[in-house]
Image (cartoon, rainbow, N blue to C red; front, side, top):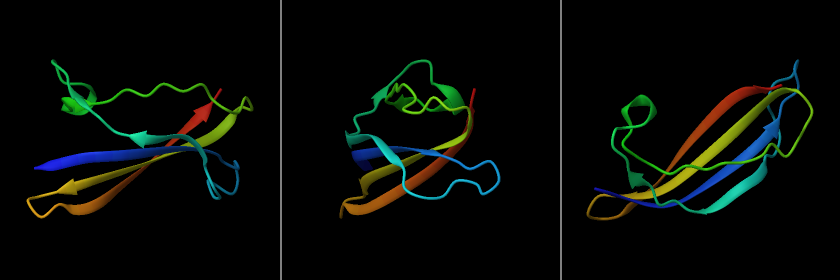
Length: 91
């Protein structure tokens, strides 16, 4: 069993030749309270929370979202971090 605690979502503009480096602009930092959805969402995931953002930058080109998920697992509440990077192109 796990308990979702919080999530942070950051946005980074990437250099087309150097890649994505540096600090992200924080778009959201707060509670993560996923709900169960039927039918499951993309990838068969049934519990999720939607977040919608407008791009803070208007320049086209490569960008990256970084999502950090903090949660507790098991009877002893072991704290864990899950980090996911999503690369995309702003058009």
